[in-house]
Image (cartoon, rainbow, N blue to C red; front, side):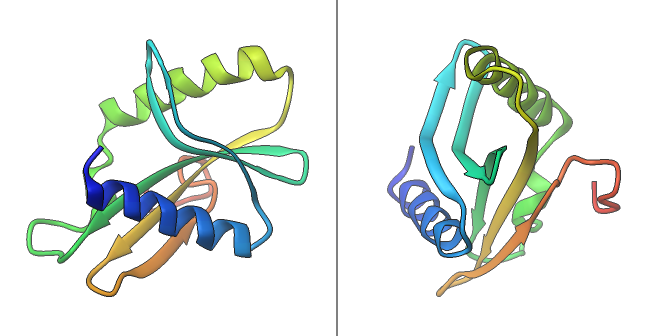
Length: 117
């Protein structure tokens, strides 16, 4: 990961912790892919994808989450859940734009209720 990516993930982790989430893992890797942050909100596991862009000149940070990336995230999350047991889970996205970064937190980003995806 690049230095910018590391700092974006650290900023996102701090942002989420201040909102009551507990960070369980950073950069969880398995044969299916990587999850930037794994957190806990109450009894729910939260798999977090962090995306940062200095500008929207080539599309915003959320636009870089492709269908293939979502598939890898879901597969990696299933791998994590196999060891964690039967728990509720969701996928969140933290988008960082500009300098200094503006933070946008999308909860249940891949859920049916989210019209953006």
